[in-house]
Length: 84
Image 1 (tube, one colour):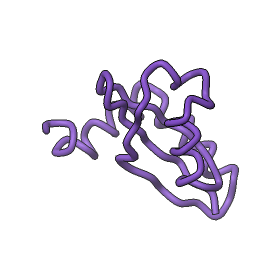
Image 2 (tube, helix red, strand yellow):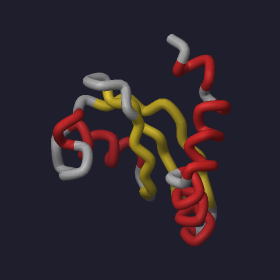
Image 3 (cartoon, helix red, strand yellow):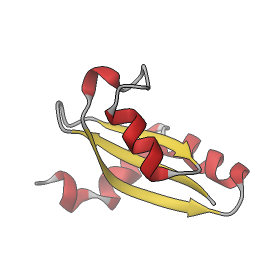
Image 4 (cartoon, helix red, strand yellow):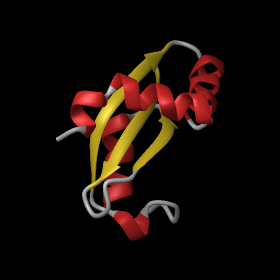
């Protein structure tokens, strides 16, 4: 299985979109500062993930979610979460 996940920084509220084959391990790595892109904004909370059987499908979904339309769809999808 492959996963596309969305994390939210508890420090500044921004979200991060990524791809992995192990969501729990990857969240731990982000929170331990092992990713340069997310290190300054940790800790993170997992707010959403999707599972895929094929790596190509997961990478395509990650790419879409990182686009302008994708970010807008995330805000719609998680509007109740982000309104907290």
